[in-house]
Length: 382
Ligand SMILES: Cc1ncc(COP(=O)(O)O)c(C=O)c1O
Image 1: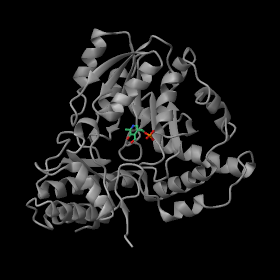
Image 2 (image 1 turned 180 degrees about the vertical axis):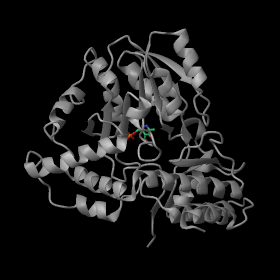
Image 3 (image 1 turned 30 degrees about the vertical axis):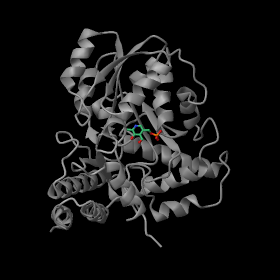
């Protein structure tokens, strides 16, 4: 027997009480009973996104909402500025290109956040840019982009700010209405502590207005149709009934904890992961703008990151994420989003120290754990 720990930045662990709610017999979705659950989720999501606008629930992974935020808002030939500082920035632009948009790529060094000045400059150079597309947190590089400052560039203009919040919604405050973000989207299998299979997206009034003129083809992800149905406490097509039940429970748990406390917990776990990995002597991937969703660190010279991640998973039972593309074999990412608490970080660092020591790397066992414990104990008045 091996006890397994899922410490990856998605899918993330699901709390037992949520699993139990999702195991209940399937309810028919066109019933007042299910509509009541759906309506409760819709209200909860508005609170989570901090918006007065509806948040549509789609049966898809997060990429479905990324695609919907292109097809519902643009016409062929329009220009968008895509922040490309990692795997998901790249995917963002590829989706836009697939639909015939002109993509201005704003390349950002992996591990760095986008500079607001560079976005401002790009817009000045090309006023045809109809929208700025970015991640809140670029999961592949564990970077947090400066969303509030980017929103200041687009607020009060016709230009949209579209934020892939897949690893930032529920991790850090990103109040959609207050900051003036035009589109926020996320997925279920991250901070929302659910299995994969749901995506969520909300549009500002400005974005809804723009969507009326959008000519790109769409059918399944027709957000105006979803909005109409959501107003009647239902969805256009068969919803992921069990996941919606789980969502109701998750939102209840998040509001019981209090959103401010949810954000504080993420920040504290992130600080502990950073302190712990620094004490092990590992170089951070995102030293200047680290995200609170996951912490990426370079593996020491001579230690193959991919082999380390495999050993951690297969021998120790602890699943981390490795690096993608140019970072393949070079980094380890420790997640701390969603159903994560202090002792998940202790497990992560402890396993990392043990697996590193086994490679022959000079590790002082317990150094990372001790640094994290000191940081984590602040949560308990220690
Ligand atoms: C920032 C970000 N965007 C997009 C995605 C893609 O989401 P999905 O795999 O749910 O389609 C992910 C998944 O890890 C992500 O972290």
